[in-house]
Length: 593
Image 1 (spheres, rainbow, N blue to C red):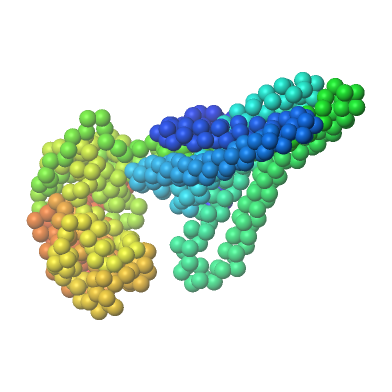
Image 2: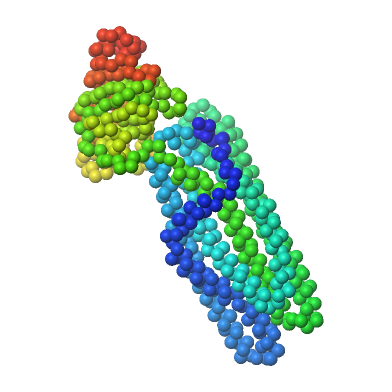
């Protein structure tokens, strides 16, 4: 549970996992035709670019001494044509690689989001939502450059490097050997830097995740922050997390940018040696001036691919730190999922049975202990009892938001563990205490559970649960835009919209978890008529601390200590003078009862 904090770093992988890159290749494979086409244009243009210094050598050593103007013009035309072709290839390459990169990013993000939609409640119970969000947005975005340009550029630069070395060897073997002497030094430096750089980027991703988690938490809790005048304290926490992120970023970039200066240093030293040896060779007559000029041009071109490859290596180390988090989320096991060969749930009539059901959120801490009860079609069952007794857990198990530890839940004689989640949940309506309202219109929010419903059906559902009047008093009625989480609406209005949504979905089994807790007494009296209409003809489960809403339930179960302590009708339980009686007495309802 410790990871459910904004200030706790996630665990780091100690070893470089090439398996992450192999998985990334699977996303690249569907685009191999476009990549091969882009690679063709890049390689052909690189080869032509590599030939240009050789043309200059011919001009310097052959055509100028011979005063061959026609030859010079011909080679100039060839060089100009090559440059035009290179520019065209560059334009095509940019278009193709950007498209490929964004298509891959789109697919990764889609897979990640789809998996998040399927993960059970327990996953979200143990992680700050900001840390989940940063993986979908920031981490995936950070892969864009390596996918759009990095892979193809690096492959091209490897070939370009071989082209250049080939031309250099064809011109002068000794000078080429001197140029290559700097590579072993660079390789040693890369090995030295690799582990430090990878760890630095892993740490940076952690600090970014922590900061994002705190920002998300602060935005969601802004009303509490201002109510308790916590702005200054929160700013201190934010500054600490932001400073940690800043330090980790600076450290990571320090290691990333250490490569380029080392390449430049080795390049400068080897170039200096080549100039000394080249000038000496010209004086002794071993080589011509054109050879040295062309060779020095190749030297600068030789280290450019090295720089690009080194930059790609840096990008890979950075990308792997993000890929670890992305694939970690995609690999998160679906604790609640369709079993192999799961059947479609038949049309639900409404009979339900719990048989010796046990459940715990944490090992060794049971919440439900051998709970058994039977419900007939069309009955309304109410659960009451102290906070944390397991009331919400029971209704969550009916919808299979969690798997039972042992025991069986039957609906119409069918074990719900063997049916598909979609076929089960699509026939249920769930209203929770926190009535979530999505950004959009009121009409869209009510229609959320039944996309095919007409406007008339939406309005009829709202009228049934007494939501129509307040909706029509708003600026644009049912087309009024409401903000995310329904901040423009009161808590009671949000719950009335949720009632309308549940009624419109027309579920066979209805679950109301503290669904009337935010409605004032006067509205509740009016709503009771709509609620009776909502419950009519369907099996319903109600959790309520306000006992006035459940007096007419067919059966009331008092849940405590992981089991059913008492059950019966309102009148029967009062006659027992047990815990339900004490609860009614505590709410001052004995007179009315």
